[in-house]
Length: 119
Image 1 (spheres, rainbow, N blue to C red):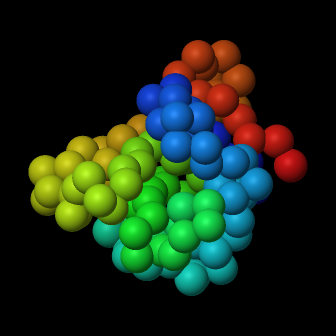
Image 2 (cartoon, rainbow, N blue to C red):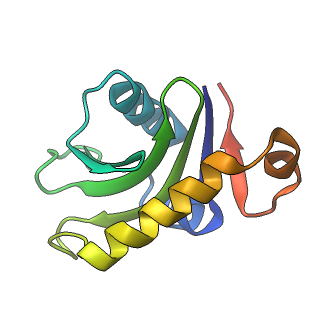
């Protein structure tokens, strides 16, 4: 499974001290069917606890995932900053997932929109 972060998400993760190791664990959970919410179209919402804290006060991450193939971290927010995502945002994430899943290996390799999390 290849795992990517958008440029925006990379900045968010760095600012919040979210490690690539924890992101790989999130992908393993979602890929195994242990996710918090299936938003449809390959878009999932998953909780991630803050370092030293619990999941309820942690982060909410939006992952576009095609099972066994690719995962893209596209959005995240602290639960304390935002209660949930709006229906219009979900619709946008679904459109984004469709485009991401249609990308060829060459397009992914050349894109500056993503960074890959290495195993």
